[in-house]
Image (cartoon, rainbow, N blue to C red; front, side, top):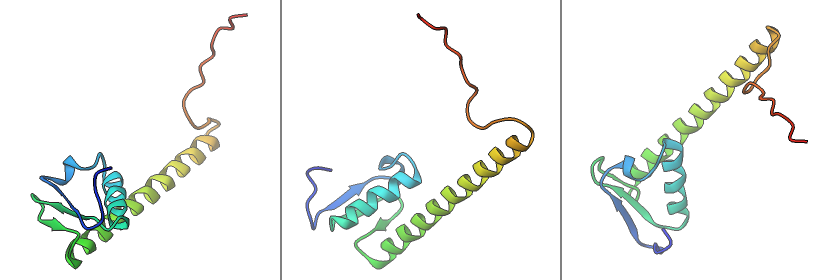
Length: 100
């Protein structure tokens, strides 16, 4: 990534070779776009150097944001339900023996 310069094109064989998750991939491509670097995935025939490729990544970014919102809502609902049942959210607390 440090060697990429404005006007370059980063080419990958497949999208899953570029990012660990959809969110990670979208963030990487947004960073590349900010640096004015095109992104091409050969297997999926995606090229952010053209309007169709940029549209695809805008759709992916929207889906990633939607997914994060759904996870946030489910987490909040689950914590509220646990609280109503008298429980608490998060991992079980571990008591460590005191070394003193």
